Image (cartoon, rainbow, N blue to C red):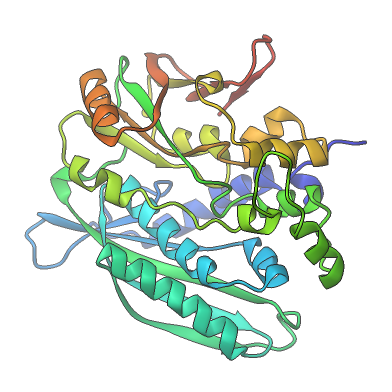
Length: 355
């Protein structure tokens, strides 16, 4: 069997990064002096008006991706609403911000009341738990653009951070340690590859039968394992924001550990990650086995059990890990030029990913 890859499913990460790099130059022509950081972080950072430079607003926008197709096949949508809010809050957290408000965008060929109501229940539940106001949104019916019985869901979240507490990775130095916090599954990334691996083709009866399968290592069907809501790390790390020993944070989404950590690594530093320091959750092993996916591709696409990363002084990381009661020290920062991130996932010399 030829190994599956993200590119074979129609998602070309390399091409996407190339395009984004080209359009960045055009986007930056709009920047004013109130834009406090360049593109590339987990949110856009803008000086909050009327605060004499003491506060910054952080904004992020994203979608849930093709996890929606799994929810459609299983007929459960509330978790998708939770996914969107948690994903957005994690992006803000990576910049040191806490959420203020959220807006959503729902689009489909035809409005399905039940689906929309489930999604809104999930979003309001997640927003309420985070102290974030859901202040509005847009519902679009677009036959001809969307296929019947499918939908898309996106959201924009805005948060706030004291300017002096912005986390952008610039304080990362050699000697810092990397704490990896566990994910609870795929979160909201890599589902095109996961669906291809599991042979989910969009045929309702066939997909349902596959999703009802219970793997030998679990007591839950594949559908429930795939639809576990994206974990939110804000409740864990809210008190750590502003700590002197906190130097960088990364939300591990599309692009895995390597590409997401690389977004915050300053010149002259390299983050070295050893993937042998934590156990890969069984759901990733199942996806890899069924699709005969190369291990390097798995680490390029999925979080592989690490949903969020905190980088900081050794004493800070040790204290944080002790207070949280979870996580692994998965790497360290060394003095080096490019590549910015090196991830070793096996004992062989070639079992290395870089960015």
